Image 1: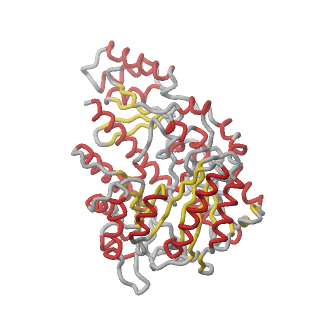
Image 2: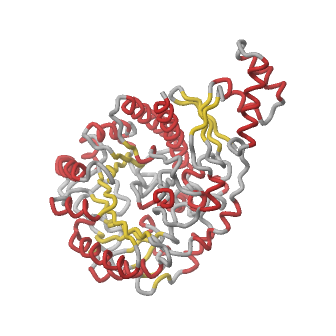
Image 3: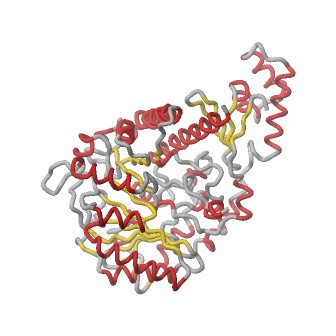
Length: 49
Length: 458
């Protein structure tokens, strides 16, 4: 596409099929302890691939 | 729903529900803004008026591309996840992380401490080893088939009870073998008691270490005092450097707090980077609104400007090959969490509990000391099911009206329940001040990812 570049991202809808194993890190256990953020968490299944 | 914004020369479209991100030129930016409420003829008229060089063929091709993305579910994708949220009650039925308050007491005297100078407005206390072991047993017992478990050594100052921390790591390693679990231990420390033993042990055993530093010496020393009232920057900075270097500058975070006294906090993060730290983080202070250091709504424009300033500086440094990480800008667009995680949030009170030195359980560290939120203990387990149910049934992006139309909801998963509760007395009434900052951080983070991808393609 000439005017639109699509950045590679995880398809959230497809992730509902294989997701939900719950093995990922609890978000508040990371750096912040006050500001919830999940976007920087890694999927354990993706990490293992 | 889409969110579009311009930052650092990039025109960015975030498709909220699919997670797709597009970088577009000015013409496409305007066309996408018009697309849902205008006919093709109307869009062509507007665009050719704004951009006289455009031909009718150009507009036709652009509209065809937009339709293609829409058909592929990457633009204007409708939210299909409300049903997913209904499964969460089942999926959030096991515990996987505890915040272990091994010491309610501190060797610093920070002015802004949310934990009541380390003791959470209760009695000071050091967690006995037996309470710690019972906490790990409780975690294993309640974790069902979950394999990855997390334990954060927290306080007060956990290094005041360092021998117990070490013994608990050894005990956890035994539990791993007998119960097929994998513990990720982490430590949050003010640094005063860091020595070679702490550095060696942390680097062997701790998956992450959070080091409290507010940034510039004068900013840090204004808030973070010794018990005698002196500054602490000079007492900790070399220890932090040694620890971070010994870890290969990985798996740690310098973690600052900004207040009304350093609303120009971008300079504090940049100071951390200038000191050689590669993994940084800073958070707004948690405080009563009448505190002299409290942040207020009228500060938001300046604070947002600071996040933007920080992002631009990081972009410039990335381009020079001198990049560093900032916690909130480390967005993983391809390997990030699935939609369940993005809907469910932090797991407070369900997947995550805080344990006090006496073994009492609270939904998270920010509720410790609030008697209404004491939910049990590590020997008897959860005794206040009604409180836990309020988190299990009412803590996701679909239980919060304010989240429904927010483009950032799948990046924050509904925000911090503790902040909501402490501001409004209700975990589902969002802490709008925090939301405003989070939306700005997400805009900056996505911009940096777009810039990174474009740099990689150049």
